[in-house]
Amino acid sequence: MAEGYVAGVCNIGPAETERRRRVGERGALAALGLLVLLRLARAPRAARLLVFFPAAVSAAGYLQAARRFCAAYGWKGVVNFGSLGAVESVEEVEARAEDRKQALAIAQQSAAIGLGVALVGVAMGRG
Image (cartoon, rainbow, N blue to C red; front, side, top):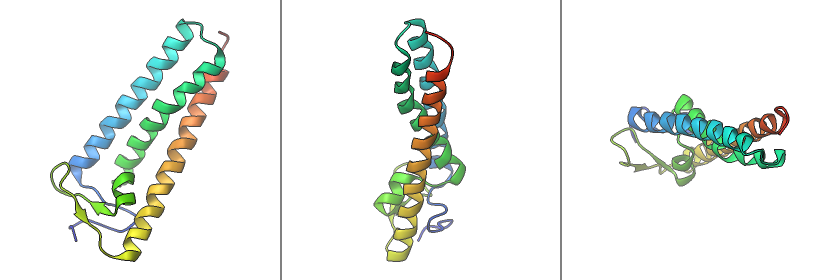
């Protein structure tokens, strides 16, 4: 198994971690941009709920980077501590189960953050 792998804790190395940080940044910019566009267009307040999607993507990217854990890799039962995309299988059943728990937690937390951001967007001012 790859050096640095800890089941349910860490399944990616520096290159993959950096990739997820960039996803977090781009998602945050997309969420902010969408919110600004919706307000400028005077879209109905409920339309601001669309901010959920880029905000959840941003949260997922940042959470994965901070934890050095890729949720998709955890769900698939693979790890990568080398170059981008160079994955290795996790063979141990218990380790795969721990990875899936962490993947699910990241998905749930990302959705909760996305919803929170969207609700704040809806609550912001008039118009």
